[in-house]
Image (cartoon, rainbow, N blue to C red; front, top):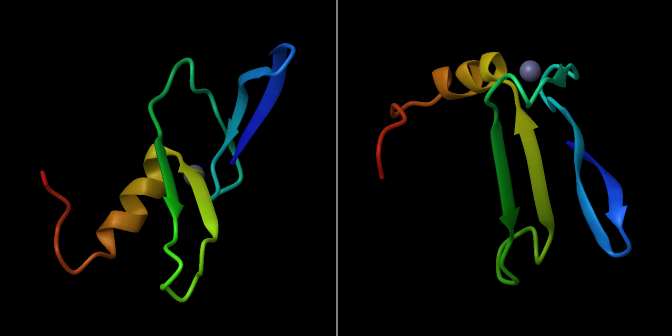
Length: 74
Ligand SMILES: [Zn+2]
């Protein structure tokens, strides 16, 4: 989850990043994190819904640890 602040009229920049997994603030100036975005197609079950989320490194590791196939280069 990202919070934005207005920098100049009609322009914003990220001011705070909260991990959607654990709810803690991610100090993005000091730590790396995962950001995912997906716009679902009209013929999917989500029908045009836009999703986005951020995960701290620990929550990202927990998520990928549950995958049947290991994360790798695609
Ligand atoms: Zn987290």
